[in-house]
Length: 114
Length: 112
Image 1 (spheres, chains in turn green, yellow):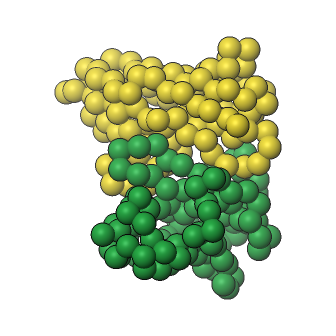
Image 2 (spheres, rainbow over the protein chains, first blue to last red):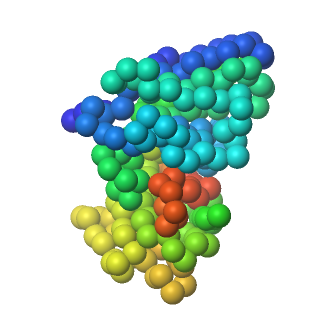
């Protein structure tokens, strides 16, 4: 069964550094998402992406964040200058058509900002 | 915007008993309500979902009910097993957009 994959599984970085989290959505899916989960808390929406542009973003997704689909398979989340509070599990998800059907989640990247 | 409340935060049941988790939502126009199961350190995985034109849906030991008037939906797990132990999240998708808005999660412990 096709799965969303993410790399790396764990990223440790110093405050102020840039990080890029990578995702490979399921190949025939058209909608892509990033969510984050701070340890012990609920999953929070960051951004959705369709047709090579952001379709929706949350207030968390400020100017420090950006997303890109650099080729036909990868979907990336960049954090330009990491803060301590960016430490969280970041999940990529994808869905075949609109969001009103299953969104398939990747295994997550645990980001630790020191 | 949409807000989803989930109760209880923790739930312990004996193996074989039933478990019920309840969620309420604020946006009456929301029309898709999935439930995700997340085992420790793993990705959330969809276990069942329901759309607003349906009042109940069942899949083996799992069922979801939706009351649109009261804006609440519930997950029912019957004949619980130890492998049902996990965190369960309800979610809703508002009418506008396609983001999942999650509840705070319920830690379910099934004691054998």
